[in-house]
Amino acid sequence: MKLGFQSAILADLSFEEVIDFAADTGFDCVEIMCWPVGKSDRKYAGVTHLDVDGFTKADAERVLAYCASKGVAISALGYYPNPLSPDAEEAEIAVAHLRKLIDAASLLGLDVVNTFVGNDWTKSVDGNWPTFIETWGPLLSYAEDKKIRIGIENCAMYFTKDEWPGGKNLARSPSIWRRMYQDFPTPYFGLNYDPSHFIWMQMNHLKPLEEFKDRIFHAHAKDVRIDQDRLDDVGTMAYPLEYHDPCIPGEGDINWAEFIGRLKETGFDGAFCIEVEDKKYEGSLEDRKQALRVSYEHLRPLV
View (cartoon, helix red, strand yellow):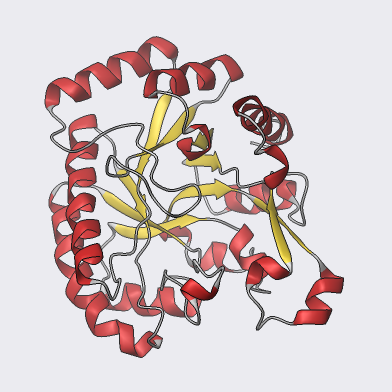
């Protein structure tokens, strides 16, 4: 298992500076964010450490040479939009850019691109399904042709009234995963497994590991704290951030020794990347670097 981090938290830095920090800290790998160049209205989104628009073989050779010189690998390329958005233009941009990530990953010799399935939050799961099939059938065929596995993170993307009631990512539960993989049994369609999202949804984060072990291509290390008093007051129908706080590993409710042990038992030997979304460490770039250092110290002995 390789210990890394997701690069979104170091948005201020260039690609080279991100790799330098990873090497200096002792990380094995980095999940590199590849959003389209420009701004995003969502926190932790819109980060472009590699611009895959027009990415060439020469670009790939330069990137790989720099990583090799520092002893740090790229675990995956990451881009987390909403390919099933009810806004047709937004969905079209997301799908087109995902194809560019698949192309870039192929040039880099990688085998994983991480993203969201997407969701029209105003519709039910059944209401979304025809668009899911129509959108992801061609995308998965394209990825399979390039030998690139697609890792879907299991975040519901439900935080405020803007995502009510269904959230912006359909792939939020094991029951939906089973349906996804029944319709698309290709081995190039799997998970970027993040245990923290199970916690705030009141689900067992260990139980799916064995059943979906062949679908876990990549994993995120993010912790979460449930405020039980607040949950008792507002209930699970409240917006999730009203009763939980994302935090760095070791400062929340997840037993990481147990989780990593169970993940290893499934045979997982891929990348395990820290994702920082902790308000306590957002004051400055140095604070965010420190969040990664503290997380590293907590997880390295377990990995």
